[in-house]
Length: 261
Ligand code: 5IU
Image (cartoon, rainbow, N blue to C red):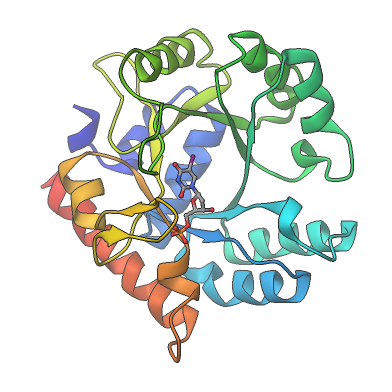
């Protein structure tokens, strides 16, 4: 049912503050595109975030790959998120016990909870990881995605493990708002957001197990909500990233319009 509803309709009915904001941005900017910025210097990350910002709803970061990370980078990313109206998703993939992830999420060098609207975790340690992250993130109106599936070849996140993610998300829906996965996991009562990595205009694989599917397949057929695109946008020789971002924005949005028809 949620598959056929507009992002705007779902925003109005949703209990989670972050989802209302996210769907609102998507409607306003007509985009379900997230940039996966696996970039390793501060200057280059800021440059691409500023150029591609108008076309995306979410900027996905791996903050620990930035060689010259400092607090100023975070301050400027937050300023860009306000300038262009996008959310920041630190793809941290927490995987430790509740007490440890609290420290990793709230403190350390990166202080992720202070600037990332969204983060994610594996449920391999059990429910305590969600409870730990929630203690830090919920008071700040942050949101958590569970890694229900992965896009890489041979992923072990399948079957009953995927189902367990959905079960825990329902139990913690005051903080968990969705999944990383390849399709929708919503049912009649629960409206979850799915974000899908491994997206390219041409399906295929890279040499390290990544498997690419098209926006049409992911959004229209599988009912996912947001496409996450990295190298399709920033790794094409001779083509500006903003030009490619607009191409992916349009492909994702057209697939969504076809879905809600
Ligand atoms: N990513 C995946 N697959 C997954 C998960 C995360 O590719 O299952 I969870 C990340 C890795 C990278 C981005 O940051 O998404 C994909 O970038 P490319 O479009 O360049 O493959």
